[in-house]
Length: 286
Image 1 (cartoon, rainbow, N blue to C red):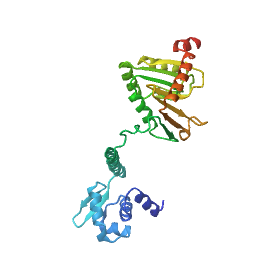
Image 2 (cartoon, helix red, strand yellow):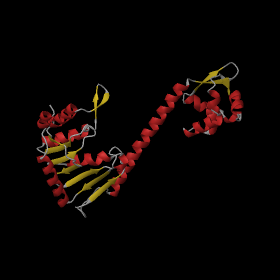
Image 3 (cartoon, rainbow, N blue to C red):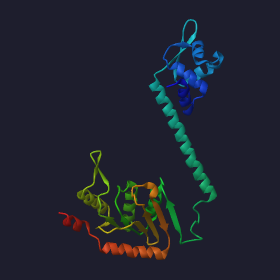
Image 4 (cartoon, helix red, strand yellow):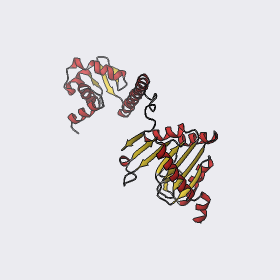
């Protein structure tokens, strides 16, 4: 690769052009004086001393005293890579921490979230397209539920520990969770560290695990929506495009409208009454 291209790559990771030129000369691995380095790098000799001193302080090269002159030699590039990666991670961690602090403080100062529903108790929130934090909305609804969660779901993954913990807490406090799951095998099961296509037995075991922490479960062949009803007040509906796995084709609706929620509850009860218990499904598939 041409040195010009390499210099541009060094600049892309934060090096200045003259630093990149010095670094490329040092990467030959030879023990060199500042004069030799400046000659090969085509830089003025007096301009490279500060950079070489910085490289020594950061642990990129060694400074070696000879009887007549100071010489410099780069250390193992793999060690330098680890050092720079650590610096990047630390800097990025500080930036992320600052980002969270700034937005938290700014949100508090601006009063975000205070009385947001006071003017319009019956509202619709739409989350369209790819949303990295989509699960946050659903988790917040689960966490805020006090009495009842009714859900209809087409399993395409495993319930997170956070959701399971919140559900267990609701049940311990006397709440009720009822879920209807679409009978399908469109998910993976992890066994001995590897992912395998799910079988009917896996579906049964998964639903049994849900029952194990107090959830009431039914199974259906009917084409149920992905939806949830929380305390009879809030409805959550996930709508996917033709390609169900395309994240950017998903939309979520959070609806707080009493008539709509009541209608969705009626739909849930219809599916519930016409679905199979786990025992019935297991017996049917023996």
